[in-house]
Length: 120
Image 1 (cartoon, rainbow, N blue to C red):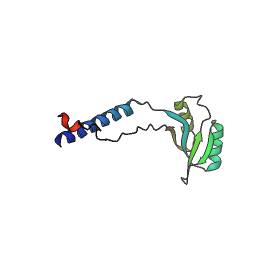
Image 2 (spheres, rainbow, N blue to C red):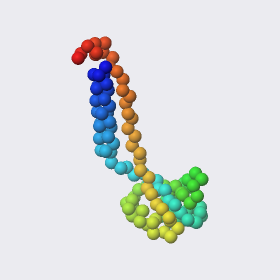
Image 3 (cartoon, rainbow, N blue to C red):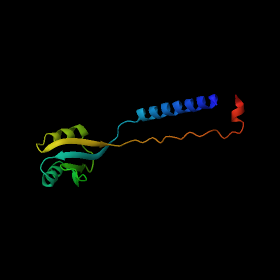
Image 4 (spheres, rainbow, N blue to C red):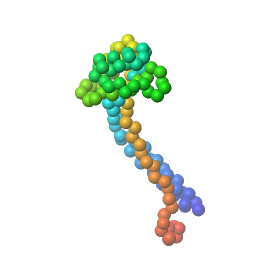
């Protein structure tokens, strides 16, 4: 029984180690989606989106002042877009959305070898 618990412990540590290294090696991937908090309502959000080449996808759920902007093509650098939007008086917050990388964890299962217990 002690060998089985040691085996389970070691395989769990190995799985955690491999998963954390995989997640650390993934670079941040930005999307063309921007979340913008705008004081002034939908009319101001539409005006700012049109002025800077965005498509306003509308208010986010029932969150007042928060709008979803989409840039049709990322021709400009993200820092430039952030700075330009931040300079607008009506803009309270700007954030470009990131792709969330998911890593599926594998479930532990006992070996199926009938002689596995007799190996030690």
